[in-house]
Image (tube, rainbow, N blue to C red; front, side, top):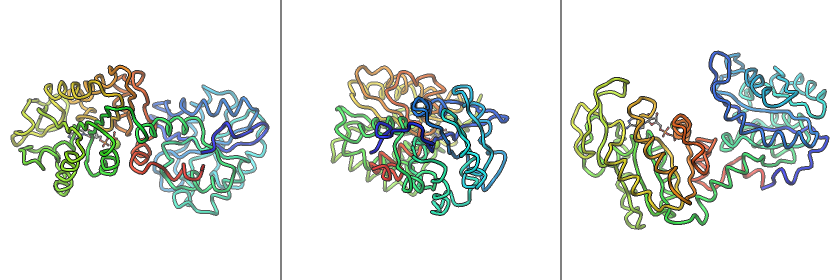
Length: 389
Ligand code: ADP
Ligand code: MG
């Protein structure tokens, strides 16, 4: 992979694809993590007297829509870097080209949302060549978009000398350690909503790992597959056979599987509802399991002991609604407390949980890409990485 070390950006106009898909609240950036994560790359290029043209998407607009404008992002970026300008032009337009031609060394211009362009998600070659006129070199630092074969990710990378930014490099380094020669014992903790979202990752990781801990809603598909009573808990009925299959395969491979022993249940995932604790194999109707219970918290912490590599994806319960966040917090703490272990968290909601629970600084790597990190662990590569080889 070509990286920033291979790029002499001195005096050049460099086009950088960043991931500024940030949450907005009343027209202001609600969480600046993704902006901060882009700074090492931007500062490095600016130290070489380059001028920078930044491209990003934000949300899922259907064409131009002021609700999804990147203007507030430029505002936020301006707090970290001097000389940031927002150029309110569609990034493939003639106006955009004319505006960036006037950039001086050390200046940073953020163009409007690439998803305002109808060809972006189709990787339209005509649009890609319009993007390519915006710079003399291309840097991909949007790890969170690297699994998208879109014009601003792969299309333009085929047309310009293209390099991985520092964030992309850091992500790939951390995630590839989970696939290639990880230190053992190796534990994977999976949770979240659906088995079906995580099948690819499970299948690819299973032969590499020693212990598999399953919580979250998806645990109920496994419990039901084993014939347990799960009450009104979420179950993917059409994945029961697959769950049985995965358990069988885990056994053949000698992977220790840990499922919940007890659950915190309620009739609905709402704040203030009455909660009860049940054994995981006997949840009566009308209750649904909404978090792992205290025995499971302990068992999971024990199962993690001594692990030298840990990957965690998916919350253990409905962490958005206290008190159903306690299992996620307990597992996060247990992972964070491991001595000498390489620990990685990936997945949109898992990372949100880690941030909200204040665990980020105690984990080895917290991936900025939800879908991208899972797809990388499933396939060992991403469309955005392929074009940088
Ligand atoms: P990630 O984004 O980290 O990959 P997912 O999107 O797979 O995670 O899952 C996160 C969602 O799973 C959260 O919205 C959470 O509320 C939900 N969830 C976790 N456990 C349960 C449960 N027991 N019942 C219902 N929903 C759950
Ligand atoms: Mg999610």
